[in-house]
Length: 300
Image (cartoon, rainbow, N blue to C red; front, side):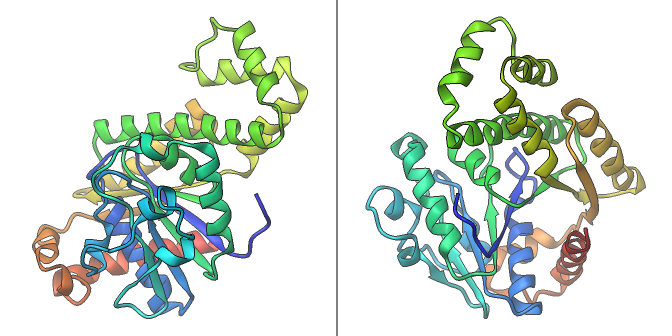
């Protein structure tokens, strides 16, 4: 990838309904409105995009489909928002990712994204572990992980992170022109499963010094920040430290627990009137909490 001057954040969780879209919206609006920086928010969901709703933007006329299928430049599908300094690129609603499941198309997207004149770019990563979502998270400088305080959400987050680490490693292997060497190692060690990620990567390191360096580089330079959403009690608040510890123990990742956002019972009532969400009294504390967590991330 070319050297770039913007900072890219991926907001991810691996599970739908954990609050990625609303939190990424608040993060982007906060930076644009309160820090006065030119900001871009990107919805990477290619099958059920809805991020535009949180921004009071009616169904966008141009989406990522027009970039991937119609070959429009990324700069031409940017949509304005009601917020100063904030622009938006919409995902799509009704077609399968296989239509654009092409590495070269994805690479073109990331190259163009890096050239756009925005100082901060937030990627709202779609649910699941589709190629494009994983690759989008893989190119980010910082990955902000969102989870609910329940076992299913945490399990989905764990699985997402395993796949993300492998994707980051594979992308760098391809960029280093070591794909054939990597595939030969996989063939030779076909019985070694990626289910045990630590053992799998140990085998790969032993087979190739160069790929081992790539693996070490990915682990040393990946930054992850954890937010627990919809906490209801002190036990939920404390859960973040436990989750960080478990993820660090089993995945060997550097994960910083930023903090939590309280459950607001009337928040979804405010969302029913999307245009008023940003001024609705019930959402002010929510917005302040998310903004405070981002300020903490900037200090790391």
